[in-house]
Amino acid sequence: MTTHRVRRPFRLAVAVAATMLLVAACGGDDVPETDFPAPPPETESPSAAATETAEPADEAPSIDGTTVTLITHDSFNLSDGTLEEFTALTGVTVELLEVGDAGTLVAEAILTKDAPLGDVLFGIDNTFLQRGLDAGIFERYESPALAGVPENLQLDPRHRVTPVDYGDVCVNYWKDAVPRVPERLEDLVHPDFTDQFVVQHPETSSPGLAFLLATIAAFGESWELYWEDLRANGVTVTAGWEDAYYGEFTSGGGERSVVVSYASSPPAEVIFADPPTDTAPTGVITESCYRQIEFAGILSGTDNEAGAQALIDFMLSETWQNDVPLNMFVYPVIESATLPPEFVEHTAVPDNPLMLDPAEIEANRDAWTERWVEIVLR
View 1: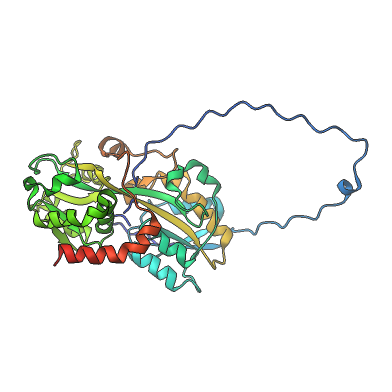
View 2: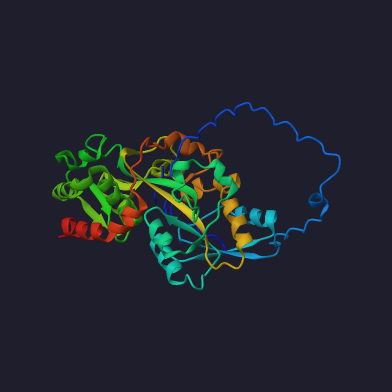
């Protein structure tokens, strides 16, 4: 089995996506009392049709000893033993194939759809979801475990993909460095925040694209004016998240106190703090959060459909779901999952995260990013 590569904290493939995040576990509704139907009346003799010998049903093929290839992004990470538990339960071995970031992952799956590189794809999020659906790269499968997943995370009613985790891309700030605590996106164009904000390029960064979408969702047709104001107020742009967070932002010794990152960044600051701390040094503008939902789907043309279905089901098990927060710094989707205490204590969960319809994103992404370049980098 492929060895999991350890990665920098709280990179997403992001996002959620979120509501990642997150969402506080919901209690189940009470089950109404129901009268059982009366049994049918007895008959003196069975009918001729009932006495006929039924044809035996086809038995499901055994998956014990088979292999499922899981194609994913290079931010994928699980604890040692998680996939081995799946093998112990099913007899199926999982081979991992990492093919780059989320955009590269989807593009590769589309290019190879007639001869797929694997059986299951994990890591397509709602910013690229429509592209994958339109290309027809997934088979339909409705996992029984979806009963434990909130409906607002199930974006595809045809069940070509299954939600597995989510996260929120949000504006973060360093509490001891900001001139004042920002509460809204509009605060970032105020003179108090001149030369204080760093973002990522939406054409080269997943959180950068998510933040652009957040501004479009928040301001509608006025999003261009907002970016013009940000540019006038000294916003700076980096190619990727690490350059922003560990370079320009205060966390890495930079001079900018506000950055586009994740809702899970504050708990990560606590977990990886040296020396240890019980207080997160960063805060989140919850009104800025854009939800990224990560999905998995069975690739059309798989030669191990039963094994692929079993892996999708396992992704919605408590074993998998409880494992993802501290490995990929995202939130589990099943309501019965247990969040690490650091997530509970240090994560700000947005009540109404920003989102756009995947079809709208697919139809306008290129035009939006091109216009962003004209405004911000001209």
